[in-house]
Each structure stands twice: as C-alpha cells, then as structure tokens.
Image (tube, rainbow, N blue to C red; front, side, top):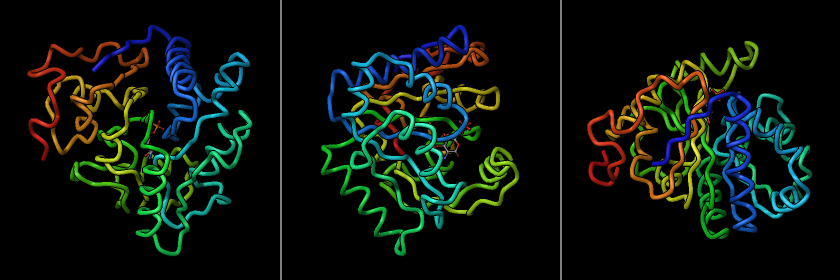
Length: 257
Ligand code: GLP
C-alpha cells in the first residue's frame, strides 16, 4: 500500500489527476472503473485542463461506473450515470462507445450484474479502479459485512449510507438498493487508487491504514493488493500512518472473512 498525504486540496486533486493520466498514457485502452460522490468532483474538473496528449489518452480509455441505484435509468438526475455523464464523459468528450454504464433500471438486475462482469472480462479486466470511501468504510456500494468473495451484485444500502447520500442529493429520496461491482471484482483490478477525503472518513481511513483486514470495514479488503495507492486529503493528515497499526500492509489473503 502506497499512502500519499496531500498537503492541500489542490495537491490532492493534482495528484489524483496525475495518477489517472499516467495510467492512461502507459496503458492505452485500459478499462477504468470510476466513482461518484463529492470526492472525485475536483479530479473530474481538473482533467478538463490537462494537456492535449493526456486528453487524447483519456479518450482512448474505456469506462465503467462502480455502482448505480437499482431502478434508476441514465436519464434520472439522481442516477450515477447522469452524474458521470455530466461531470466526466461529456466535458472530456469521451466517445459513448467507450462507456459502459451500469443499468440501474434493467428489467433483470441479476442479469445486468452478470453482463457487467462479462464486460469486464471482455475488456481484459479492470486496469485502474478509482474508489471513494464511505464513512462506514464502504467501497462502491459494498457495505460493512459484505463477503469479500462477491462479484457484481445487487446490494442493500445501509441506513447510514442512504441518509448521507440523500442529504448530499438535496433531500431527494433514493432507492434502498444498488447494483455494485463486488469486493472480489475490485480486488481483481490491476491497479487501485482510493481517494479519501472529508473528516467523516477518519475512522474508515484509520482502519485501512491500520493494516488489519476486517469484514466490518470493507475498504480493509484492499489491504495487501499489489498496486494500491491511498491518496489522503489534507483534512485527514492526522490519521495514523501505516506502521502505526498491528500489521500494516499485510496480505488481505491471509485472513479473508
Ligand atoms: C456513495 C458511493 C460510493 C462513494 C461514497 C462516498 O455511497 N456509492 O462509491 O465512494 O458515496 O461519497 P463522497 O465522495 O460523497 O463522500
């Protein structure tokens, strides 16, 4: 696990953008799994002003959202598909054929989850998964207690996640379930960039940096991943660094739940 502590908000954003741009330059056509939420907003905005070469490389990549609310189609302004289209795909002029959105409104959600997994396989796996972090340690919509063997699946959302997300969505009611890439799917990504921002993430980040895999803290499932970078925003600078914990960086495979 590589931990990068950003000294400022602008450094946090620049570091995330550098990471993504370097990846698409080195791995043209790679499949990138992208997050929603407040955390990646600065990154998505900053990408618009990258060099022409980097923008061109970003346009050769393929994209997949990490998760979606069950029942919401891409035209619904509450959907993650709509968020990503407005914040990332349209401003960067990413060709529509290179974007695979998880269809929250699919008639058969289980079949849609299987189709997402098939798409990942067809793309040769996820090259880079960019993740946010929930206050309760969730990654994508994998809530505490989710078995680490799960692939893309329909997930019930915790009361805490729904409450936070509805507040962020300006009080709109959100569906109680989501379709999400599973923990096994995310762990299989060749490279992972986890973005930790916001003081509410302190406890979740501390568990991740502590190095002790715990099923109640889904982000700790990433411990031991061969290419994991954790980028921390300045407000999280006081969270104990790896080495302070019992077994920093040890392989998650030693004790999967
Ligand atoms: C949602 C998303 C997650 C995201 C999390 C954090 O629940 N499903 O993928 O990482 O929120 O959001 P924020 O960045 O707004 O804190």
